[in-house]
Image 1 (cartoon, one colour):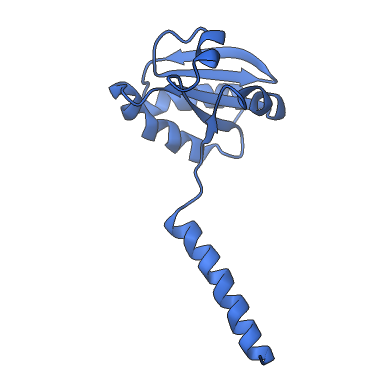
Image 2 (cartoon, rainbow, N blue to C red):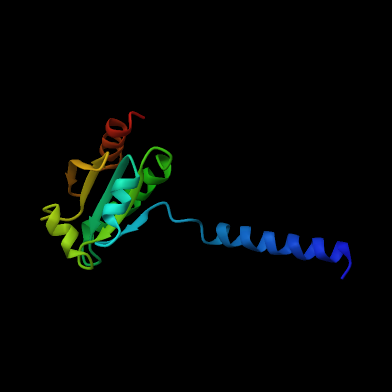
Length: 133
C-alpha cells in the first residue's frame, strides 16, 4: 500500500471513531453500584449520586434535570446514578427511604441529601454550595 493510502485509511478510522462519539455522546453520569460506590467517593472530591428506580415516575422527571446539571458542572464534581432496586446495600447504608434522593459527598463523607425531584435551580444551588462554583 502506498503512503497516501495508509494516510487515508488512518484518517477514515479516526473520523469513524469521532462519529461514534457524536452519534453516541459520552454519558455525563457514572453508573454507581454497590461494588464501585466506595471507590468513586474516595477518588473524587465532590460526588452527587441520584438514587432512583425504573418504576419511579418522579425519578424519570428528575433524570433530565440531574443530567443537565451534571453536564454543566462536570468539571467541578462527579455525578452518578444508583438504581436502588439493583443496589439495595448502598440504599440501606445511606438510609435512602424515598426516591429520588440525591446523596452529596465531599471528601469521602456524606454531607447532605436532597429528597424528591427538585427543580433545576435548587439542584444547581446545592452544586454551587459544595463545589464553590
